Image 1 (tube, rainbow, N blue to C red):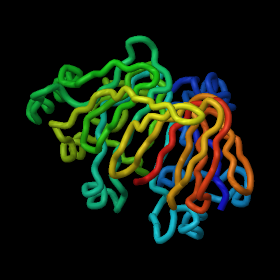
Image 2 (image 1 turned 90 degrees about the vertical axis):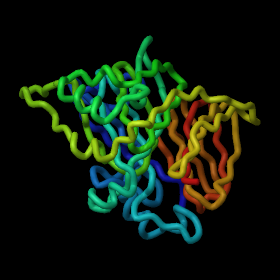
Image 3 (image 1 turned 90 degrees about the horizontal axis):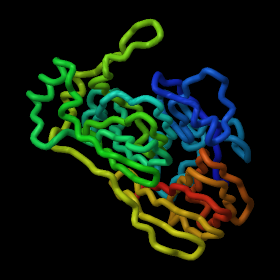
Image 4 (image 1 turned 30 degrees about the horizontal axis):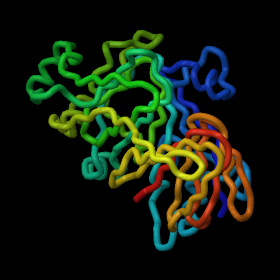
Amino acid sequence: MEPLKFKPIFMERIWGGTALKERFGFDIPEGKKIGELWTVSDNRTAVSVIDGGEFDGKKISDVALEFAESLYGKGKKYERFPLLIKIIDAQDKLSVQVHPDDEYAYKYENGDSGKTEMWYIIDAKPGAKLVCGLKEGTTREEFIKLLEEERLEECLKEVEVKAGDVVYIPAGMVHAIGEGILICEIQQNSDLTYRVYDYNRVDEKGRKRELHVDKALDVIDFELKSDKIVPMFEEIKGGRIARAVESPYFNVEIIELAEKMEFETYDRFETLTSVEGILEVEWEEGTKVVKAGETIVIPAFVDKYKVKGKAKFLKAYVP
């Protein structure tokens, strides 16, 4: 199996903007508020289609089922490709929300997985903020009272971020993305989101978006909070690398490529998502180019590969 690239999946969102067209050059019609680009997905909501190569036009779900060992490694198998990778253009603030963990999702959401995620800040306007949990001492009772009084902002923990920062969002933690932020999000393969609060916004027809308060209250961990991670880079041959996130669901490394690097897959798949610049991926039997805003999946079958160029990308894999 060769490395796999995918056709982009665009999602219109009430809070979306035009950064995906302006920064990455995607062909998006005028007037469309595109909030999310799904660069690779094998989800109930949307499944990625392979772009080019031996599996051109096939869904990743079909290829993963038929060639599981080539993709994942010896003896490994997943019901669906386990990672979902997005680029989020938040021109307005997103709802305050929370995601369930695996146990809750399996029980109440038709056997889906839970949703733990991480954010890499590609760009942010000065003073841009994220919500990363609740203020110290916030109780369930106080949370409900503030929610009923439409004053939930008073108990939210906000963190100011800039380009290059990382935030880890475990399942059960209340969170939100503020306005003016462009993010690469790597997460468990789940689209389960329980909206708690949406600032009383309405769509073009005057309708409020659906909230999921009861389920959210079931899964919120009122002690969970996070802070931004400033990646610590180390110099390696061909550039720099920072090991940004290590979790049970995914590990993520930030790599600044200056010229050329070589990697081994260690009998696992790896994803490479370019957030800046163009990289050329070379393996024994061929090469593929990955532009900013694209993800390539390196299958376990490709045991060694090289990357060339000048770019910044995120490498993710399941530990």
